[in-house]
Image (cartoon, rainbow, N blue to C red; front, side, top):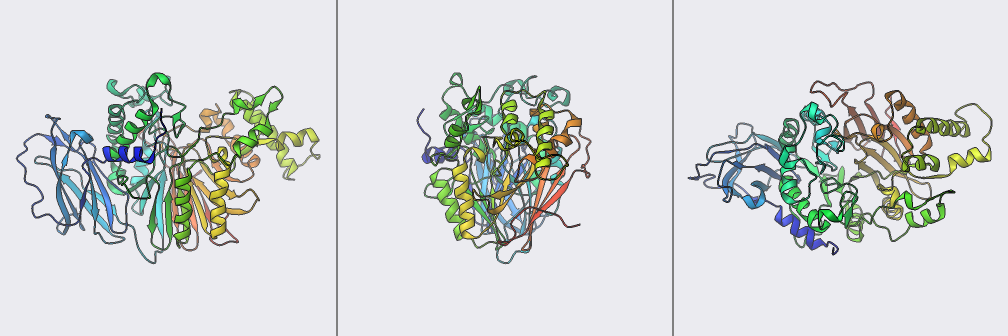
Length: 582
């Protein structure tokens, strides 16, 4: 398979752009069609990629017959819910070639304004959607809901429903794993309760996704979910993909969940990305534009949100601990040489240079990275990593407790004698927990942190992927405090509690032990689904985590006992995770 180039991404984007049109104002006659086919808007409406003067609107028209032909669809945009003050209108063709999706890039709008929009055909009208443009100039606050990792068979999208109840959001930031490529058969990932919950896929989509039609159908199933539709209808999305939009643990030219029997990975990748561009409210990549899926959203002088692709455009293949464990333990010298190699890349040269330039140009108070994976250092004792790598989970809670106890004694947090050399070796022989995260690409992480340090920027990193909630202090290789990381829990995908096979009674101890052993970790929740609300002002950036008490029932509540908050303040003397006063 040949290496995928930027032109390949342009091709996937162009093929997946649907009937993208640019709307600059009112059309003289917005709709005049003799088409009498029955149509509906089964998948609702959505908006995304907001700018200060524009936003992308999305819908899908479902005709009852003649799928070879296009269906005429009209759109209207107004400043009021009654559509008395129309500011944009026009028509486009929903084509079979683009899965009958339609995207309208509405331009010439006012900054920081709320707009209402709808679509219609000759016999049907869509729900009315609400969207917002980005503010300009002096901005007092920005509020973003951050979500990721929504596995349909795992449970209900109660988290999406909860976010849709909010009336105070500027946007939803979705950090990827919007869909999963697995089947919902018993024994498939996170699908043990799918049948009982009525969350199985239909027979025509209940195999692993490989081809374009498979990915398209899966998006259709997800977008048929009422809770996800309600959220899309309410607020614009700012999105980026992760691995499961194609295949698990993807890298630039392959994935852990792809084998030769599934055909050429490059073909699978491009077809999956085509479906992504068709179904998501995102602008297509344009020839000559130096931003691709990585792009910046500017909320006036307060926040510059830089969305990154850490998966598919520049990532080298992940390292594997199995290649470094010997009978004597971890081959530390070889491992450190490889994991710290200056040749290993996560973002790729093009994206890294773009990010450095974007942070350099920006004068916003907060420089925010919206990306998929944990950036904070998660170094844990090697004996724990060996147990995890070999799936020896039975003794893991006990070992974790023992090591945490030793660390507490070493730090003077618990009584006891000084640690012996053997005990010190147990807690000091550490290695990164997850080589699929930034810990597996350490040189490039240092470049990013070094850029923020040199530019004297207030850095906040948003992360998803792990299915758990985290707050990390970001320090460079010299131990200097650079910024913070706030990571969102999953919408429905299981977290560390399932991966490590922990009983409910072991959760609290595991969280305490990991928090103590990982030096830069300030907070984590390893077993609950939810979302993160991040609020930016000139004085602070605040993360609030909200967790639902179940995804296995339509009846749920917010677990107020475990919902929590952290803040970070700007300025070179601050830029560290702090508990909320009071």
